[in-house]
Image 1: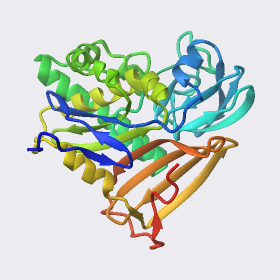
Image 2: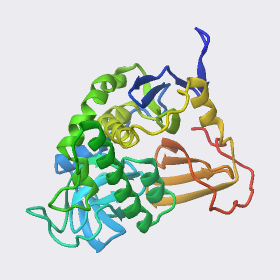
Image 3: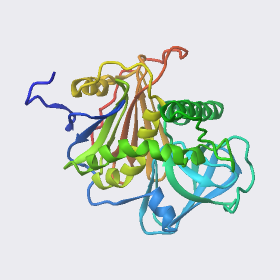
Image 4: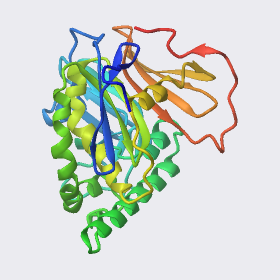
Length: 343
């Protein structure tokens, strides 16, 4: 048990007591934002307000985007765009500059089989972004392993988990797949049965975003820490919150009834964040004129993904995760410090 006044902090980020609903524990992180005076429009809002057009290119793993507004648009890794020839997820965080055209987006298909117009949707572009990837394994398959076959496999796996858990919970058979396209993750996440199951979680957790100086969160499912996400701009985190919260609630529902470990504490979240103080492997990928995507990984499978705004010369989003290294050869040791550039 924590001492009454014990504070768990790292690099100016404070970890708060968890709020637990069923098998999901959510820790809010607070701190001082370092990207101020700049507003990022989320992809959801930009698409809804027709500020951007996400274009079908005919290539499964690459789309393009036109930004006709005067705003910077932030696309979150795992964002799902609905429509086109297949629903896709965007691999990395990407910042799209104002008044820019034909900016490439690396993507993965989250709807196996379809390669044509669906119902009344537009086939040359995408209609909306209301969901994001809803499992740790899916995020890693797209962002880290970059494996389309693994993405399809994990989509199918999660839908199977949701069917099993919702059927057991309700006492009758549930199938989240939609007849319009039974392989679509997007349509499965729109399921009415799933929507009902999310309500209890959402009601208890939605107001955590109102915590003063909230910059991110950590979450644990069945007593296991699944990830930590930190944002360097409070407005961006606030605007992303509903979509983020829904994704982790869906993941928790898909794991209901599994073995439960001892509930995690703020101290254990802090230890999770401290594990990659030195990276054995690192890489930098320049995604466009204003976005770098950095990966820092050690041999134990601890990894941090960091997205940098090149105009601000500061990171915007950091994601702390752990990968399965059982089938991965250890990387070359280069003793690169993860936090050598703390902007």
